[in-house]
Image (tube, rainbow, N blue to C red):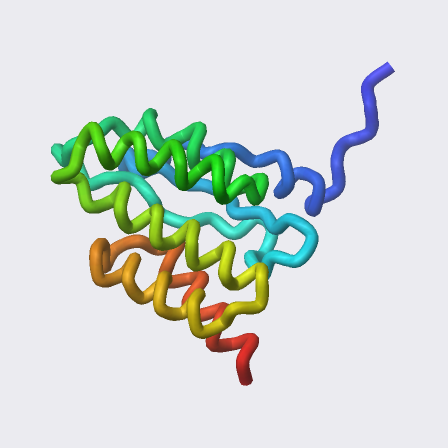
Amino acid sequence: MPSPSPSPEDAGDRRIPSRAPSGDIRVAVVRPAAAVVRPGAMARTGSAPGAAGKPDELAPILEQMQRGQWEAARTALAALAAKAPDTPRYRALICYARGREAQLAQRVDEARVELQDALQIDPELQLAKTALAELFTRRK
């Protein structure tokens, strides 16, 4: 007997990074208990064609971020950044992870600085753009 189909919220919680037709990696960022990311939101995180680093290397890290495992994600990103110091995406994602951690801990100013740093390193990082917009939306 088939199990009942999951609700939309459950389906969002189980999403994993996937490759879009354009080759970009997309991930649904789901919230642990107090996160401010909307379940099911998709964000562009892939590298530009020809950029250093393999997008597949990011898939398990993005999955950790989905689950709110920020410290583990930062550690894995630091290892990638050490192997490929010329890839700014890794450094930007480290700032993004620190920003989300600060946001969850209600350290709004620290979160804002980290997310802005992520965007200075990689202005196309949609995850950081979305997080920063949500941070300002919540402050109003």
